Length: 234
Image 1 (cartoon, one colour):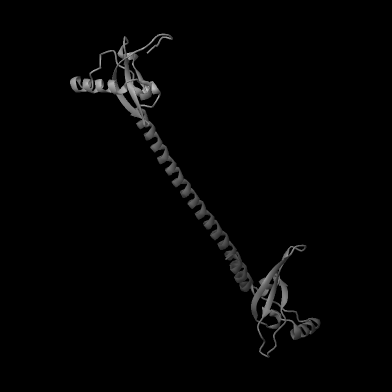
Image 2 (image 1 turned 180 degrees about the horizontal axis):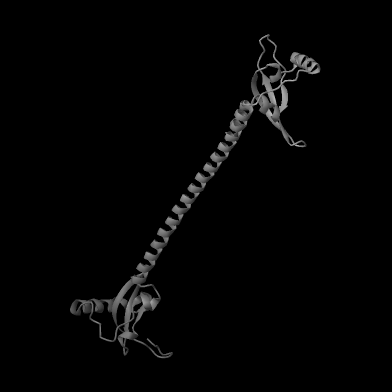
């Protein structure tokens, strides 16, 4: 309703009332104005509210809830008047929100599947790498099993061997390997050294442990080397 800046306006009657967010609003018909000029007012803005509500209830009893409806002269809706969303808009918004939540759940499930697949791929790569290392050791072992180990027959070599037999252990002295104790890498040479522990000899003497390089183990006991490397990979 276009109200004038000056002048008084009198309430003719109340046509309807509704509640929104806990607040009541009354549809006020003003004297001398059409239904389309009605306004929705809060109860504190309406003097003699009880009197107008009594008149409203009498109109409902006599003419029904549509007593004020006139074709082409409909009053404004409460939603339009106070800027509140209509019921259809609220339902549409709720449906959109449900669709968004559903899509978000689907995205979360896809992320979980992707992480699961990545984890499986990492496990497969690790298994392949371990298998390749074991196969390489087995190939080296088969090659060295087919080679003939030649021993030096020189007198000087025999003397050195006799001296070493008294204090140091070794495959060349007929000693049996107990286990590989540890391995270290010599950075300046770029090679690995292995610390060998020997079994007790038949004569009761325990040979002295010794450090050897990879070539020594690959020559005399490639299987022990492969087993040691495989245990380290696990």
